[in-house]
Each structure stands twice: as structure tokens, then as C-alpha cells.
Image (cartoon, rainbow, N blue to C red; front, top):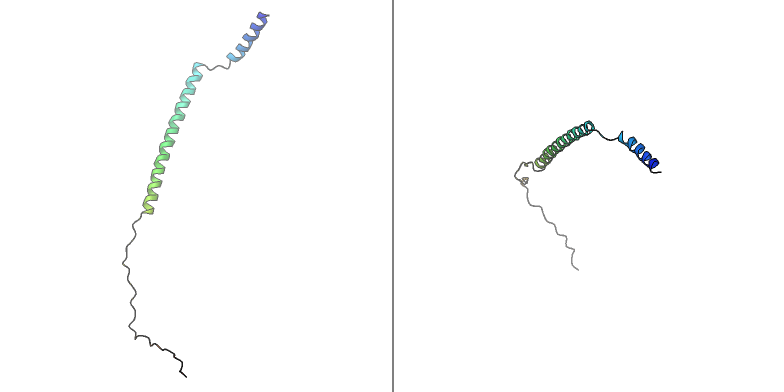
Length: 92
């Protein structure tokens, strides 16, 4: 009974042992993760620079100095004052 159980466990282990990672597999994974980390860092820095430039452009666009012109009232042509007519009904 124990021999059958041991044989089943050995067969199961031998089936799993073929899927275990080797030292070369782990080194390849480590190199790939390092490459992905460097690419992620590069993207992060590029995004930060882009956001800095974008927000800087928005700031300068919103705070663009306006041309200040003095307010001048339009000149009125010289006219005689209007005649005021008051209609008063006659008294009885």
C-alpha cells in the first residue's frame, strides 16, 4: 500500500519537475523584468516632462499680457441744446 502511494507521488513529482524553472529561465525572467522596469521609468519621465510642458503652456496662454488701451469717450458734436416743449392744457 505504501509502495503504491509512494509510486503515485513520485510519478506526480516527476510530472511537475519538468515544469520547474531552471537557473537560465530565472535569469531570462530577471533580465526581462529589468528591461520592463527601465522602459516604465522612461515612460514615466517622458510623461512628467510632457505634463510639465503642457501645464506651462496653459499657464502662459492663460496669463498672456493684454494690450492696455486707454478708454476714450467718443467726442460729441457741438449742438444746440434741445428745445423743451411743455404742453399745458388751457384752464377753464
